[in-house]
Image (tube, rainbow, N blue to C red; front, side, top):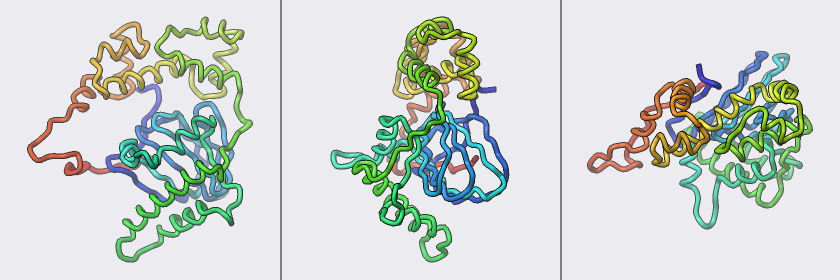
Length: 302
């Protein structure tokens, strides 16, 4: 079993879903290999993302980047309605030039240390208007309805980034997090390639290691050791995707032993790292371009 479960498989630029259900749910922590935007419409939901907890209000926009650990808790006493968009990181990169970058909203959210954006004045917001049009488009049965919905999504992304640029949207500063745990998370991510152990972390933050371990687990849902391993595996995988030799990626990501890395990698990603290396260098066929190769399909797992 992997440390955390990967959910959802995306083999196209983006996919949009309008979902409504009324079941009490509490998902385990999981991650995606793509970006995820949730437009919350109604319900009683708490979102847990990388050590922070957010209580959502209607038309809040939740930004979950690729590989962010997150889960939700849903109160089943009322319907939970939302629009979910899965977005390929490559798609975001394609819509980037000197004039604009659709990935700006994710970058800004990281700078603000927040994953949730809130529209302060719905009736005056262009973003809210396009959100309503996107919501209504799911009932559109006229010609090229799905294509129209994709065009509306692009307009939504433009308006979202305009709002973030001009500060017409608020990055929610939740009070529901422990500042000590957030500091530990930030420290781990900044020192992944260095030696990290429970004792040194406890000394760094002047805290009992046993209290620190209990606090971290209670606030995040995962142990310090499993979180460090998870983040190092993701770093190693990115390095391999970028062309680094597997052994080099192993040690560059902070692992001290290749066999430990290999076992952990197989447990998390259900395949050996050499499979990724072969995927990162796909054979080119005559007359074949990235644009001409069709995606193999899409399977949705919530």
